[in-house]
Each structure stands twice: as C-alpha cells, then as structure tokens.
Length: 129
Image (cartoon, rainbow, N blue to C red; front, side, top):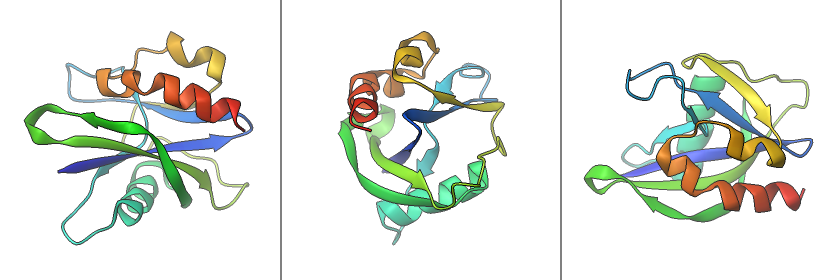
C-alpha cells in the first residue's frame, strides 16, 4: 500500500500539518497526504487528500526524495505540489494545526519518524525554489 504526501511549497516554505490523533502521534508534524485507494493514481490521491485535509486544490509535480518504508509493508511517497490558487489558505480540517515552515525551521519541528527521514530532500526542494 502506498501513502502519498505533498510537499506544498509557497514563497520558499513548505506546509506542515500537526496531528491531532492517534494519541501516540498527537502533536507531531507531517506532510499532508494519505492512502492511495484502489484504482487511483498517486497524483489523484494526493489531490483528493489535500482537498479533504486542507480544503485546498493543489497541482502535483515531481517526486521528492526516495520512497520511505513504513510498517506493515506500506510505502511513503512524497511529491512536490503547489496551490492552484494563490489566494487559497490551507486550513487544518482534520489536524490540530498547519503552518508554513522555512528550510531553517525544518529540523526544529517534532516530525513523525518517516517524515523526518525526508527532511534533507525537503531542504533541497526549498533551496531550489
């Protein structure tokens, strides 16, 4: 099973969201995203998840970093993304909080372990903006 995540970049910052649940991960940060459903492409799943979790439409671009193995045979796959409308402001629909994070701030957040593995790739993505 593939879990997709969005590295949504705006003005040299990436969007992070803070988990509200489950209890053992509440308060930790992650990239927006979720499970790819049967018959769904990675890109379609990511667009759907961002609409559900953030109430924003995104354009999905290329891959960021390598696949990260997760427990139970799952894989985390990250894609670069951007907001379709510059006027849209992501909001925490299913999460505790969202915030824009600069490259210098990345390592200061309490990321979920799988997302933490991707910090060097996220920093490289932000340097390229």
